[in-house]
Image (cartoon, rainbow, N blue to C red):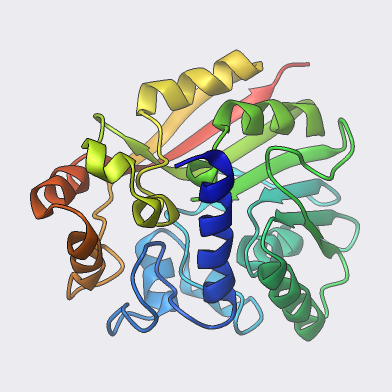
Length: 275
């Protein structure tokens, strides 16, 4: 896999999600996710029922692996940037926290997601939220303009994660906060999984080792890098009948898929840009 082919595959995968296909963060086919709704998956990863009901219908696609807003401590009037904003779910929750005097900017590289997010914002009458087409490695956001940056299960999809962290540092004001929920690895993946485009789009094969992920934040210039939480993340967790695992096993050796399933965890990480 080269970087261009990975980006193209990821964009195509999430374009299909935006058009109404699979709501899994994974390679499964449309309709694979079993009886669990996006709302049920949202509760499972840390969102309250009140939060889930507060966003426009269609904003929650069930794609996250945690709730970065639980770490954010957002305040009235702040500017927030969401890396990989999808259909706008976390942006809309952030918009409630920062109020009319605040501003939320969602950035996503998939045109179909941007279109859906903008439609959701209009539906919800949310004037303090905007969505910009762009890559998280090259954010279409001015230097030192954000008080906080959030991201939910997206940085693992980047082909240049250190550059994502450098961009986040550039965009943050002095003292600004970075809060992410993401997928990382406890041990290296089998070669067949690491080389799988399907596993990359499914938030698996692009993930970094946990210690490398945290080190990349520090090396980018962040201080107070803190692992706030860690939880097991089954590749099939969004699907009780394990068809997400089965979909990978159709294109990869079953033993390698089982090994990968025990290597993946969900983490919550917080960091600060020094003053």
